[in-house]
Image 1 (spheres, rainbow, N blue to C red):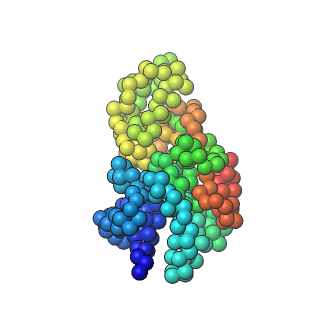
Image 2 (image 1 turned 180 degrees about the vertical axis):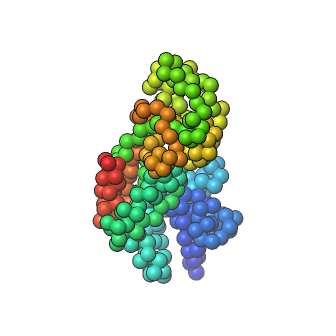
Image 3 (image 1 turned 90 degrees about the vertical axis):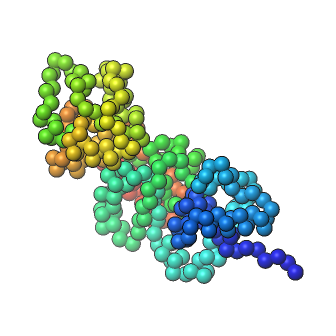
Length: 294
């Protein structure tokens, strides 16, 4: 009698790869990471092969055997799941999934989406936030990253130039003495806010103004730009930050420019994550380019 293949374990295997990790797959399936891990072990025992490199902990790094298996079964498993869940299939195929960083999503993409929805009401956009190198096997339609290397070789198109400015809370700014004759030397004497995820910003500002290497590291440092912006709004110090993220705050008066200069600090690129871009994906990426050109 032939041995029946463990289809549930195979489904979980495909989900781990698509979601980018055991924890993410567990959240998707409403299971514990341990339950998912046991199913993967069952499949590995059935195949007598190791499918994942366990050195990365929660990561979903496939071995050569795992990659070969995924390439052979992923499409068939998707078809099987769609056949058994037609409503879920319909919902997935009328929406596009966009993956980007939390800062770009919160301070640039989401504020723009209302305009997109008004123009294209038939296209649903789902946004998920992930930092770092993409997982090309994830079921994502459009990846957006600042560093093109994080797009893992997918054809990338630059759509948004990044210009950074020097800002602070207006009340904090009113306490500063900014002598014109001393240029920007006053920055040595004020609290400066830094971002661990963007340690390039202060050095870029310093270099652009002839202060390369003269400023020490910022005494106040936060994990990401979202927190750094909030710290500046609360009056904790001065901040170099991409202008696109704070335009509404400048307009409302929550933040104030401390210097007229705008320095180039990079750009953002997108890559289409599926083999063939749908018409909905093309509509979205055309809109991205339009927004970036404004």
